Length: 221
Image (cartoon, rainbow, N blue to C red; front, side, top):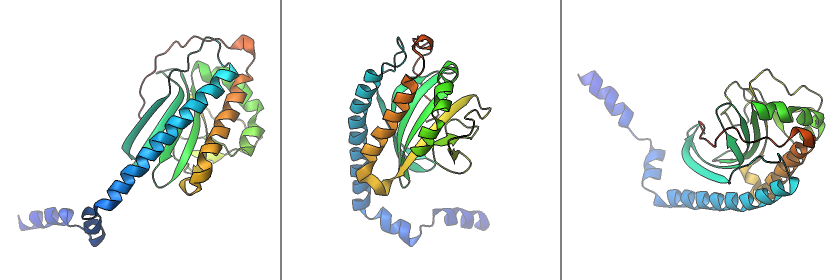
C-alpha cells in the first residue's frame, strides 16, 4: 500500500518550474492575447483568400464553402488555430487549403486533395512542380492525412522534378514559416495561397465545373 501511495504521490509532485507557472497568471493571459490575435489574423486572411479564389474562377459550379476558423489546445500537446478555405471535406472527396498556426512552431499552409479532386488537379500540380518547389512547398509522405507538422516522417521538400504521386489515396502540398517571422507571415501565406489558387485555376476549363458531391464535414483536426 505504501508503495502504491508513493507512486501516486510522485505523479502529483510539481517541479519548481511547474509551480512557478501555476502561480503566475501573467503568462496565461499573454497566451490568451496571442491566440486572439492569431484568430484575428486568420479572419483577415479569410477575406483576402475569398477574393483571390473568386477572381480565379476555380471549379465552375464548385462551392468552396465559407471560411471556417477553428481552434484548440492539443495538437501534439500544443494550442493551434486553423483556417479552412476552400473547405470541401468529405469522406471520399477533399479539396481544402488549410492555414494553421501551431504554438511554438510555425504557420503552415497546406493543400489537401483527395478522391475526384486529387484526380482532377494532380496533372496541373505536377506540371508546376518546379514553381511549387521554388516557393518552398513540401510533399506529404505520411499515411496519416491529418498530420500537419513539417517533420521528416510527414513531409519532404520538393525539388521540382519528382513525381507527386506517392501511392497514397490523397495528395498534400505544404509550406511553413516560423513564428519568429511573424511580421512576414501574413504576406507569405497570402502568396502561397495565390500560387496554389493560380495553379488550380490552370486546370483546363472543360475538366472543371464539378458539383460538390460531398458535404463539409469535420476531420481529425
